[in-house]
Image 1 (tube, helix red, strand yellow):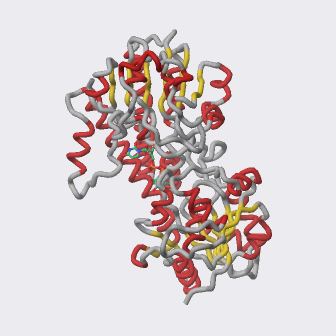
Image 2: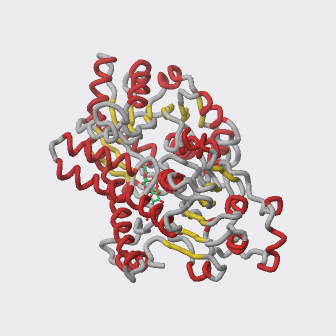
Length: 509
Ligand code: UGA
């Protein structure tokens, strides 16, 4: 038996909350989904044509459920309008049958557990609102990644704030990845629901499962206890990150021997027990999840007195940091320790392709290390990141130096560069793209000024799928014309034909 659900509230209009709310609304047209955020500016953006989150497919999805635009999916009602964005917390919390907590849970940077523990300030703040206004019987769902044991803590908090009222607390971690959020939400590998091992807990789990069953096969919905669910989320990310650190450690060996890391990855990935995913060597993992979740897992182990376990997982993060250091040092070595007077261009700032998210950008540490060498200029181009986000991420010290400039045009960013560093795995940066360019080498002289540049969108959330033209980039570089491929994205043989020197991660060049 399941409880009827008419109103759902999603607290936190971020990368998880927004897309999750939209997909829930799409597949449950009889349910009103309201997304709540205390930042009115963010809510305003979600209500506007320019969403604060760039995700392939999200704009269209939001137009369908927020604006009532016709859906092109055959199994979806032609018109529906059941997704709303608001800052009016008391009202939406009070009427919700299910409340998803999807607020930010970053790493705590102060006090006990600084750098490892989870900063629960935003989560607890939002929970206080929920405790004050939720109607008795409401189901509270942890969507944010939280430390193990949070559901127990929330239960106690609710009991203290609302004695006499009963609530069920579920853990329903999100496994979507940025850049593929809509695809992951539409066809998830699994949906995990942790509940209290009581009849009421299991009934709440079934009520939540029922919302998902609107589009997800029942056998993909896994029910566990809350601790298992909370821990599984951390461990899933830790295991994925561990694979990346493992292959990156191998890339260091490859760079000093004759082995090629991509060939090694392919060979081991064909073993069905290992599998081929998350074996791409690069600059390490960025983004807001892996580093933080490993820190949280290690902190949990340490707090349980399991120091060896904590040390084991911490090494994954250490290896990740070393990979970036190694890359920056390699650039410096190629210039024989002297970057003074040189221009370096960075292609890509987001932590991965198809997103404008600058958090935990892999470029930040690389740029900081390079700036220590006092280059003349560092330019940055990213098809999706906004200039203000990039400069904020680099920190005020960097902005004030005036050495770093963000360009909305890749050709301008790379013009007169002594070296280009490919930092993000954007398909736009590949030199083996299928798209044929009408531009030819003989045209070079006419394409040197910025006004002649290809019509790239300004660096913004809108982005571009246009592939950059390497012949044009190479022609406008200056000696020694180094291209450092930090993502193993480029065809080295083809690139070298353009008269540039290439250094590629995981390969001796
Ligand atoms: C990750 C997980 O993949 C999601 O399942 C999870 O839900 C999410 O964290 C979260 O906890 O919210 P995300 O960080 O968005 O998703 O992106 P990933 O695709 O996992 O990439 C993370 C980083 O690893 C990126 O910098 C990426 O470029 C890098 N990476 C990934 C590699 O260097 N090599 C690979 O083979 C794969």
